Amino acid sequence: MPQSKQFMKKIFKLRKQIDAVDLKILKLIALRRKLAREIGKTKKTYKLPIQDKKRELFIIKSRAKITKKLKLPQKLTSELFKIIMSDSKLVQNRTANFEANFDKKS
Image 1 (spheres, rainbow, N blue to C red):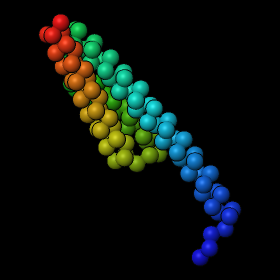
Image 2: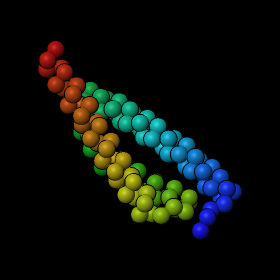
Image 3: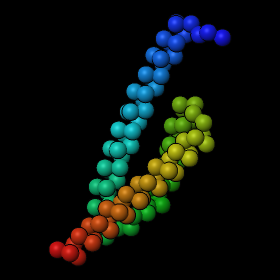
């Protein structure tokens, strides 16, 4: 079944828009990781634990409300934020450990 030029043009245009959205998402993830590093440094300075269960619970509940308002699949956003929070803790741990190891060498 041959596809019309109009169909292909429309698909191409939509895919370019998706590519642009994906780029924005990736840039926001990079920014979030940068902020997580700063939080890791701050927690190390004030000798606070990396894991903050109250904050995690707040994130889960508040993002669930936003998910509902935006009519997104709950499972999608729930899994997404589990991954994001796990990555944030990893970044914070690495930052705090790097700083601790750097301090020992100085």
